[in-house]
Length: 242
Image (cartoon, rainbow, N blue to C red; front, side, top):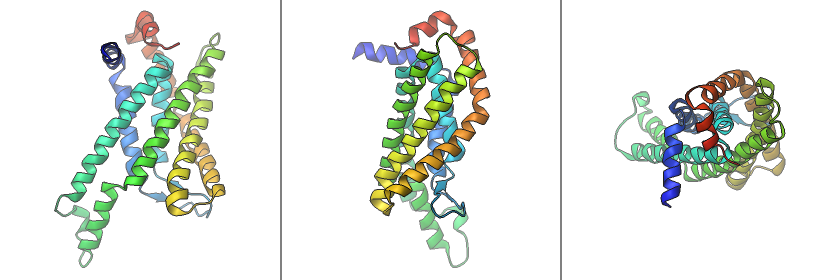
């Protein structure tokens, strides 16, 4: 236990705060934005505004995996998930505190709007639970798949290698995240068919991958600056997992 805590402390000391902050904020923001659905005009395509930030979550994990290895990246992902659950609890408490939201001041509708805002910010237990399980599973898939591809391409360097690792792992992990959530929540509580779950998981993963493709050059630059700058080769080798 003491050894594990020491390793965790060393990891937290070495991980760049910007990457950890991006991971935590993107997960918290993603779950808040997921409360708003997107009107796609297509009946079988269900999307929410969480896709605006989900790419940042997986790009952050890709950078972490590249610099520190899959086990460390997964550890940081679970820490970020813990922060998200803490924020969800705080939001829930805030939703139960007597008071009025500023946006509820509409003549004749104050009570209804205020209750709706409380329900939105407070969250629903099965959605929070489902999203947490889905993210934990997809984080493991993303980090270890990214690392595994990197092991096969270890003789090759440059943006192309980073892109292949990121694009493949992100697509598979995003599909996994969407599918696990759809099966646990949408199918169980909203009566989705298996076809709807699969279709929405696939289309959501494609759209989220497009964000990753667009922003991956930024992630590559960050990974390279961490690898060759602040960390140094010796520190990096000490953090990477076999």
